[in-house]
Amino acid sequence: MAKPQLFDVKKIRKDFPNLSVKVHGKTVVYLDNAATTLKPQSVIDATVHHYSAETSNIHRGVHYLSEKATAEYEKTRESVRAFLNAAKSSEIIFTKGTTDSINLVAHSYGRTFLQKGDEVIISEMEHHSNIVPWQILREEKGIVLKVIPMNNNGEFSVADFEKQLSPKTKFVSLVYISNSLGTINPVAEIIKISHRQNIPVLIDAAQTVNHMPVDVQKLDCDFLALSGHKLYGPTGVGVLYGKTDLLNKMPPYQGGGDMISSVTFEKTTYNVLPYKFEAGTPNIAGVIALKAAIDYINSISFENIMQHEQELLDYGTKVLTKIPGLRLIGTAKHKAAILAFVLPNIHAHDLGTLVDEDGIAIRTGHHCTQPVMKHFGIPATSRVSLAFYNTKEELDLLAASVKKAIKVFSPKL
Amino acid sequence: MSDNSRAELYQQVILEHHHKPRNFGEMADATHDAEGYNPLCGDHLHIYLHVDDNNLIDNVMFKGDGCAISRASASMMTVALKGKPVAEAKTLYEEFHQLILGHLKPEKDPNQLGKLAIFSGIWQYPSRVKCASLCWHTMKGALDKTKSVSTE
Ligand SMILES: Cc1ncc(COP(=O)(O)O)c(C=O)c1O
Image (tube, rainbow over all chains, first blue to last red; front, side, top):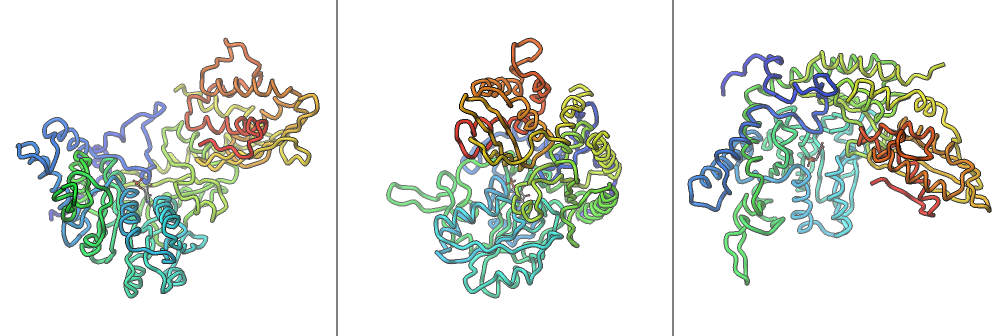
């Protein structure tokens, strides 16, 4: 691989046209990357190129354009395989996103292999997309959901996990990096322990693959879910990684075109991996553009990304905690560049509206993690989630804007 | 949007009601009450009404957590409703609804909104419209004897 270039944030920012958009007359300060990341020009170009020069359906034509589109689509599969260091590209299944990937597993694996009384372990900091599919399965099959509690820093330990583990545990599904707290969870150790009992583990890596390298073979996770749009790629495309033997055992999630090898009214034979799980015409342009996103990340390198984001996290923590009364929510030892906080006298939604007037985009609310809000006894937080194209200057602008909002809200005596 | 839109949404009147909400607290002898919940932002309100034999709302109280907009709106609603006949409260509900959607322009359309017209600019903040309307939906729910109201 080519040696990574020197990290030049000014130059990098030019690759993201959305960074020069004006909001309320000011250049946008985009600090909502955990909701979705902006897209580099190369991803936009790849999408436009597909629709303007290579439009075709895949896996079903002998004509030139169809073969070209199929080849491009399959190139992304190989690119994702390399990105995650999966053993085979047939272990990479394209989905709509993390939510879709988790539902696929809960539906196909869960309905087939989990029985009444079997226990599934999740944690208190899961995104709703890793809670609700299991609750649906609980209604349907009578499985039992066990929840690893977290402490007030927003972290749980391997020992906390082991307390939930029992001979009845049959599945573990955990978030790697929490979207509302930034916590990096000790999933590698948890996977190792689970495997001693032959328990498969799904990792929700929606907020991980954009911040640090993930090696599915080294982690040894059985399933891993991610979303393209949080990885500088397009919306509507995601990935489920799964180990071959598990995927082979699992029945299809949806029936339709592409997922079959032969259909008669008497009997249908399912296609091989990964096509068995890709029914219907997929998001072809999205998948093709996802490769451009991965290429872009590789060109910057995780080494640079991690170093810059760590600097931003440290700096952001410093400037925010200097604001009187501000309380960080999520103070884990190991965390990614996510800063959530509350202020004593300003509701998150008021703050969100006030900083928006300065062109600053932050997320306010429960971040699809209501149990986390409940843990801290708060209705909502304001969340700053950073990407490698953010700068310290942007964090200064945020801090100034927050201080201004506090002034607006201080009671006039 | 104009540069003074922040000033428009967070006017002194709204901030003042937020800091010192009127009619805040529980009502032991309420004839009607309901809880309102906005799952999107976690806002939570409880509205209590006392309706007398002449169908007059002689007392209104509210309780709950929420952003400044939802709290100020609830506070101002209680002030507006106190002493009004139930039928008029329902008219106000309709007018307020049209106001925050930007359909009713208080300067030209006839209305009884009075001070509530201050919320006329909120339609420009689609994500905040529900903050202002939660108390009204909850009040309507209480009058209609619906115990729990959700904005979703
Ligand atoms: C940790 C985590 N898991 C899952 C999801 C769901 O991702 P998507 O909405 O792309 O399916 C998100 C998105 O916010 C997330 O942050």
